[in-house]
Image 1 (cartoon, rainbow, N blue to C red):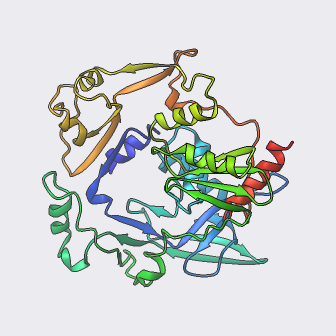
Image 2 (cartoon, rainbow, N blue to C red):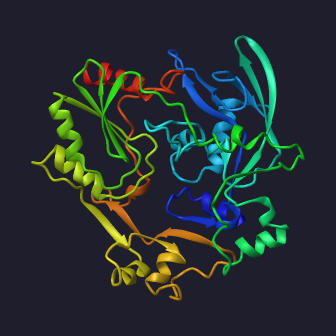
Image 3 (cartoon, rainbow, N blue to C red):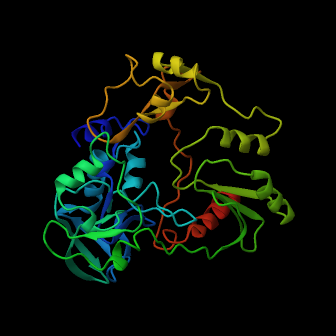
Length: 384
């Protein structure tokens, strides 16, 4: 875990260690948090979903005695390693529903991949003008066949953690395990089975076409279309935009909520469709490492490497530039090349961003219904 924490400090989503034996469980509390900003610009932390009670939309005043916003910022600063920008990490720490209800790149605070340092967390809340303190203990949910399949921690280590052991136990059903405090966990169906569920609603738009990783909507009573994406996998954009044409859609909103990145050819394809008379790509100064140059000779798709996976497939696992063999079962991912801005030669594009000219914030409605934000975008940005 010391190596995991050290790599997290790089804030580089391509340089990560995934020790399989420590990632067989997810630690949850049954509470999902979100950030709300009022009309005066005041920011609050609130409960989006209380899967075990009725605390939805209660304001969180303090977390373990620390002001709530400050506590989330501190967690994002120290424990979220997937982005350089603190604002992005803050968003990842909290809940953020995409239109398909996924939280793949959010909710890091209340759904921990590694064993939390304490048995639970104490929240100071205000609910309907009533102040209350609650403590929620962590529950471990694991993808193992049954607790009886592992007789001891030594057996678990031998089966899951050694380099020559299976990557994980059989993934047949989820299992809740008693927290360290000794208190029995809630019934599995009340927390371990529902933490991946969401009650996202779309009240202000009609679904026109569902292409799995991309969905196409039209705002009710408007000539505004919305395309949402859950990943940058290959998408048949033409089918979706033909649906827009058939419905007389004139303006389009792209909702890319919770996309963590993926294949570069997808935005190129989209640019080529929307702006066919322009260049559908941007120039980059790509600088491969020495190891990358050797990898290119064996694979045209080498962009970043998983060790020992792809590196072994390329025959480079014993190269002098390759990492040392891992003492435990797991994968180490790292970039083997960097793309630089051709105008600003010292700017790594992976870690650069341009702030938006306009910003919209979640509230109690839009946190559960993305179409509330689509309506605001259509009224404030498309029709200023």
